[in-house]
Image (tube, rainbow, N blue to C red; front, side, top):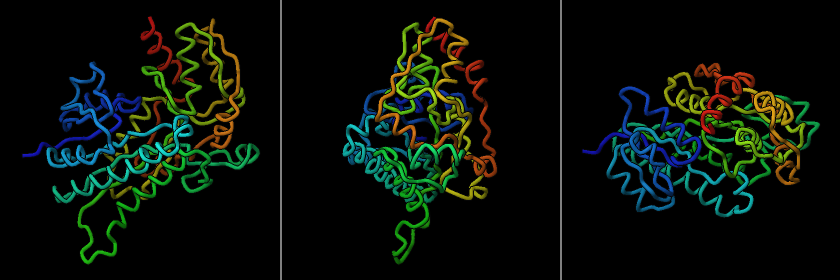
Length: 339
């Protein structure tokens, strides 16, 4: 008999590691199958049923998953991140789009096997937005889920398309068939701002200037910030990002009025982030050396994201605003890590 499980792709990434740690504390949870290009970090192995090293584009491996497990929920975190995607746009399309299609198809197959829908939790990104200029960015403030969806990065294009794919597989898959699918994908998407983790140093994200700045100060090394002092986008802590994924996953389907939800916590310019860093690490050395390409991308992203719908439909509420993020999470956790 196939074991009922939770599948996490991209399990070795920042969000994947945090999600595994949090799920491991949930009583009576389903066993976790962790999928990534490499085996999980040793500290995480006791928290999962199995760690599978494999590629989400490997059809044979996905077929084995389908036959060996009854997959109840998929957290599809595997992706090629924003900066890397600009250097390898074709590879990004394969991973971020074709990989998502393959995982949605796996969910459809699982739903047929179990005669019950499969929850598909998908992290999207602020990168789906594209504002035309800084004047517009300053004028519009917090953007809703439906506005300014003109991304200028391959990653943003991939994520926006994947959002539409999720809606399609949930509501319109095989719509011309004589007998429509009775059970399918319960697609639920969280559109994230920049995420700051105290436990892992990011790699490949355009919003990484914030966590890089904090980790550099904690390690006592100088940091050259790759955006201007006035560059501003919304952020949230990694615990709040995990809270959002789990909160949307357990939300009552009857209350959900959309497939995609913005979430956010606080919005600070780079110079105010630096002020917070120096407040707790007085010897921090931070200078600004803007990268023209990455600055252009940051300027195209909104200064804030309107998450009213998430508050209304599934009671979303972040635990950390900007000051709390530093005082209660980032600084004590990072100091302990580098002690």
